[in-house]
Image 1 (cartoon, helix red, strand yellow):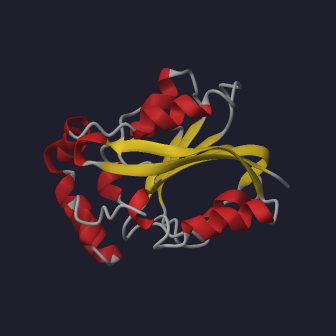
Image 2: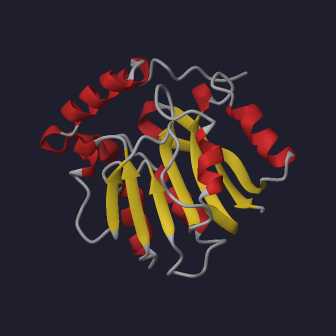
Length: 208
């Protein structure tokens, strides 16, 4: 039985892109977003990078942090020596809080739409905290796979509350059944510890 997490955070109640952008605009005032992530013990950036480094040994691998927010995943990647990182996010207010020198470039992009990137250009895609209520839908995985190289990796989290509701369970099975990827890691993460919000953490190797 899935756990309903929709009442855990106010942002989970928002339905439209406009509402989300306004929420992030307010949330980033006085660096409040980053302060909350510390207070809530948001462990997803550390946990996903700790899994990735078991599989990706080339520290110059070209990495896209999809839904990079304020750069929390990028900061973790840099700690372990990964240096060839780009970041994209839907909220310019979040991107404005990204520390300098984390990403080679950052860009405002809607991951629910077709991406302008060429095929097969990234070794790794990180997508952490992005598959959640009112944010990015399962079909975005098709585009992320398209821009990832053969034998590259996608590492992502899915908020437990939307895993079945949004159809991520079926999408993951579909991509495995049609041999788009080979799932290497899939387990429950504590995600946002003090808010009792769990997520599924998945790492998959791309097959082309």
